[in-house]
Image (cartoon, rainbow, N blue to C red):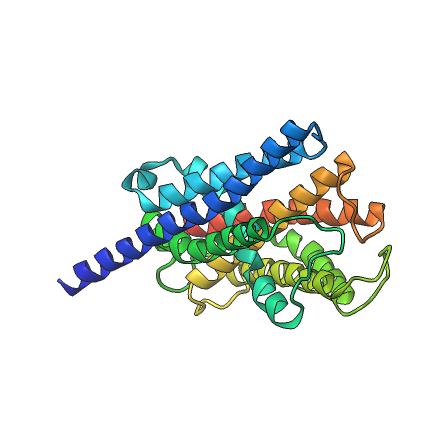
Length: 292
């Protein structure tokens, strides 16, 4: 009876978190629609394509939130749920440390030329932060219901066979590079990073280190006493962050609408390595799960 009550409580929490995620991302979606309408009305369509892409991403975020909250979400095919949750977690959940630390040590101030109304900035901030927090709560509960063996017990002997450990050296290089830039190094950069930029570098280094640790923990030399949910969750979010943010920045870098602080060649290599590393960690996680 007690177990039944606990399960119903977790389901209720998942549903609330899912609806919260959909509501939060709807605020961000509203702002983007207003921007597109304003650009079309004023005849300044320079950023319409970028905003249209973010609208599609926002709609996917709303759909993911509803899937977490509704019973039909548990019946969606794996090939649809996992990539969507992986990208959403990578984009938003991985940024929570940056959001917390950045708000404490380096509150962002609007640029002098910025013309974004306060209500738009507020809705965007609430949308991002609300979606991230809701995913932290709802996504693990959803995944735990769909794939309970990925969250129960310890790693034990049923682990990945190590064929994906070739990703560790690139992850070490990424971690070391981002840490050095966060510490103030300018090697490979066009300019010195400001405080917010250095915090972003530190957050990226944290993701690369987390992805590498998850590979090691689930590989042949990891400790069998490690709770299996820990490397699974860390690897899922960290690899999603490496892939999602790397692909996003690389795409707009190639399109010429993104100006990195790195040298262009350095930025291309950096984000390509991040995308490949993120893609390689996910099958390692699924292999470790399959062996269980």
